[in-house]
Length: 496
Image (cartoon, rainbow, N blue to C red):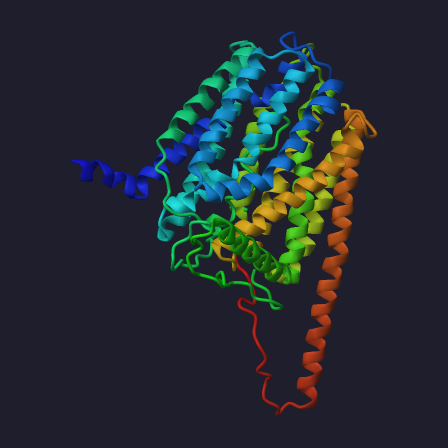
């Protein structure tokens, strides 16, 4: 009987089901679309200035400080303890949201939510330790899909409860507390992995490349960057390599193991970023994710400024549900687009960055809340589409280990940029800008990103044209000469 009862735990089905339940309930938070109306209402009675300039920046700072230590700790302790820690942090966050009062209490809420978002890395990393490689694609799809479903369901439920049942925002937070508490209970039933990607690797690790489904999983889970609650081949340097040291990273001296791991990380990152193709896609990822997180952090404050919830109907839940669904559809549609991303990818980044800049400037200049909602829908859908492309371009020829490292560094750089934006423009010790002016800054920021990649794309297309003309000229001058047998790129064209 003991063998029979243990059997399901050793299969891929058991951890997948538990992980999906954990993901669903951790994202099933109907209070999130109405966080600002709750904080500004009679329950907390906080002002827009307090929320924008004193409370929300704490999340950005705590997330930045915690991200790298948690990234290392997650692999060292083999994921499950970090998921349990995330569940505990969720519970503390919502208990403080329900019963805490004043600016200081809400700043503590932001700190604990910083722990929640920093520990989020363990959710997807757990897959690669508890599931065999042949099931990576389907399990990644399940875990990614369940979080999108949960966030959409929570947003729709919240809108129905507020609009039709006239439910208080306080009780939306009670539902969220029950949901995240359920997620914590599920985390306790996850089997403890025997290995991890770096510190507890197998003696002979199989190098696995994330599939196209895996490649999109690392796009931040919906709501993961809200103010409180709220995924290539190259002709220059192919990087589809495993880790040079495939041996067991363990020995009698733990400090030597850590040093070997850190040195291996440094060498891997140096080799990965030596590819110009990967570097520029990573640059866009970091720059745009910094802006995206900032928008998610403060967009509800802007909506409250345009249409105060105390004197008008609000449709935050419906907007978030539509934005999530639209972003998911856009990301899915990319799979049917056949484009030479090596040549035209940076032009696509420039064009959609212009669209994102325009939508943010619309949100700044319009006085109509519906136009503001529309701008947000366009912005979020455009970002989710582009991040899907960017993640695939980065991940398609990287091993799982290298993809995890590149994702971690890109996320860290994005947080550094976001922190600088917060310190300069948002924090009360900086310019302390009002929320409407902040969105003018964010729109200008995405316009700068568009300019950078527009110039880069023009250079790329012009260089490709010059190489083609030079090749044709050489053929015409010596038509009998055999074609050159130089090194060929791994994949000349990537079809999604």
